[in-house]
Amino acid sequence: MNEISQLLQQRFGLSADQAQEAENAILGLVRAKVPAQFQGIFDSLIGQAGGQQDASAQSGGLGGLLGAAEGLLGMKS
Image 1 (cartoon, rainbow, N blue to C red):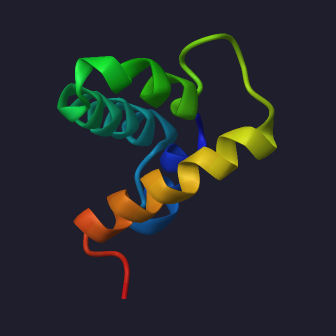
Image 2 (tube, helix red, strand yellow):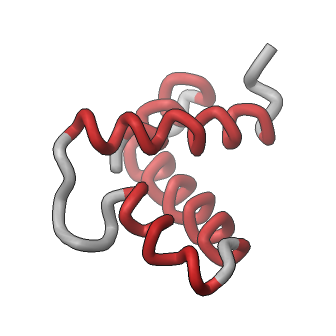
């Protein structure tokens, strides 16, 4: 899942390592808020469960997640 990391690097000038740590923290916080019965779905959307998904499947699921993250961080106009 490099899309969030890349966004953090571009928008905030973070190094690759810093962006990866931030991505892990963000996804951990979001996952902690997901009800237990939906955590499998969340994991599938971010590509952590059930093996690797192809890029088109990942980007489709990430659109809403990235949009929500951008909104929370004040990056959407």
